[in-house]
Length: 383
Image (tube, rainbow, N blue to C red; front, side, top):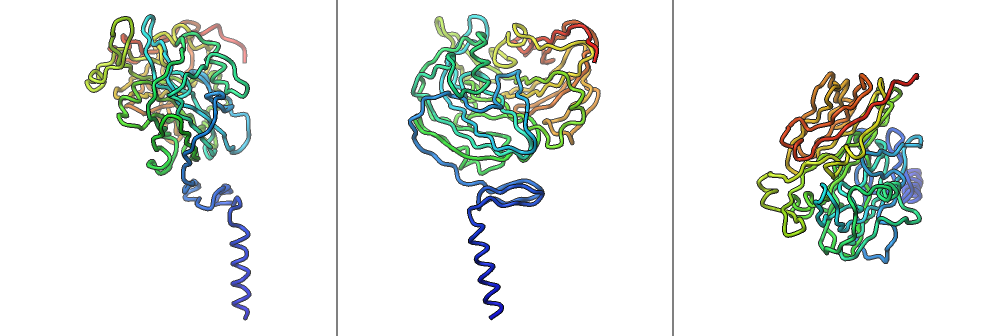
């Protein structure tokens, strides 16, 4: 009889706990019955949902989404659940003076929004495939993210809405999930919704994973997620300026008065342009800013899709570099950082004097194709 009573009590406890948030190891909160914890990381997220919705609101929603080189401040303690929307659609964008093409985008620009979260945060992600409609991003929307406000304040890419119906998907390198489920392709008019946990600190690429992945990425479907370490970087209290740079290649051929994607050039790895933050002038028309003596942190992502990058700041030495943005991967005193496609690094340097510091891909063929910019340093200020 005693065994039967204990069994009944145990069964009642299981029923009472089913469907409710549960605490995992290390104080982590499990939201779904399918979730489990290994080494302090949450796995086993629920299946993605694909549906149709009547939505024509702001294409990007979320307080921690910005336009590169901006990075949102994490103004909360502990971990947070982020509600993020990043719709996919086409825009005509300029990548060099007089050179525009009909890009496939996440959120309307190339690259797409920078998402900033903390290690251990949960992201509830929605994306509607709006490639079959004209989506205007240059007018303000109630509830839009800082990213859209920053686009509306910038005229560099000269965004124009265009229609180009196409299946698309989203692949977050920052997520640890079943790819065939969460990264599945959706048709125009469909919305996908799924969750992922920022299990690992670092700077990660996201991109469209629909075939041809080379084409979809080169057409403009990529961006960065910065996952700040739970315990921070050892120099957090010393950093004065923090930026994001995304390097990528464009493969464009002129056809009459317009430019189109050249798949042959992409296969041959022969880019027409190599750019920082989507435009050959992005960091010269709008250079980074700092002062003499400042510690500058740059989260640098080489989005490729196929080339390498040898990032260098002329006149500075990288005081500390964290490969992939993970504080356990530390290098010191580096002159350049070599990154393959989709690789990243978090880079810090001290601005030695007032002046202009050129930012370049030290693979100079790429610098001459546009991978160059500047940081302008003002006079030293008392701290």
